[in-house]
Amino acid sequence: MALATRHGKERALGRPFRHALGLPLVLADIDTDALGTFDGDRPRPAPPRDTCRLKAERGMAATGLARGLASEGSFGPHPQLPLLPVGEEWLVFLDREQGLVVEERMLAPRTNFSHLRLAADADPSSWLRRIGHPSHGVLVRPSQPLDGPALWRDLDDPDDLRQAILRAAAASADGQALLETDMRAHRNPTRMASIRRLGFRLVRRLARRCPACRTPGFGELETLPGLPCSWCGTPTGLVLWEVVGCTTCGHRERHPRRDGRLQADPGQCPLCNP
Image 1 (cartoon, rainbow, N blue to C red):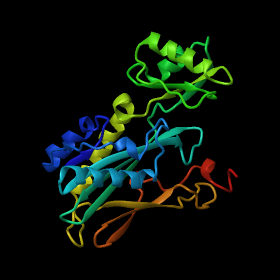
Image 2: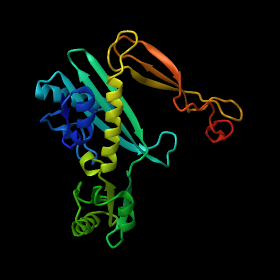
Image 3: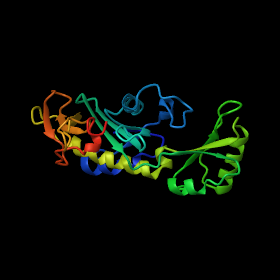
Image 4: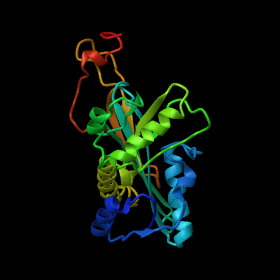
């Protein structure tokens, strides 16, 4: 099976697919960065889900294999808790012979996604410890670039990092450097662990067949909000139902949320906490 990656994701995905499904991964020799980079050097031309499928298709084309796999992620504020950063990870599995497209998505609240603006003489050590440097990578760029974009990466050595901060601050209109977590999988062990968890989830889904047509990949398609407030019963934006189904024959089933929760906290209610 073709895996489109330049960032070592085979280390996270190889084991579950090989041992559980007997599908060894073959790395596709393609430039996945052409579909967008986390540092903004190359804009992403499509949303993460579509980009993920494009990667898988290009990997299959490059290797000539009938099956393909790809991963894509994005990072930002949590959809329900805006002050909390969260990662969104996608995996797409394609099987040309069966006409199969199986996707898995995961919100990953365990992330070090963060940034820091600081002057050239400021000490970033507290922030660096919090984001896990040097095992987790850091990007440095001018806060307000004077002469076009500039970027320093792979800064594991403290002296190299200090020099990058000085250069970035000197090249910025406000005299500050912008430090960002490097979210590339091979420079971010926390993200790599999320990809591994999602890989096991996708493998379990591929092992589950549709009860109607027996096609592999029966699993979650969407969630439906409406969990009632425990005080007033008003529907909230929290998940009430989980919809599972088959992308081949269209068979769908609606199930209560897996954690068994029946009511929402009033703090999530649009009436009790407007």
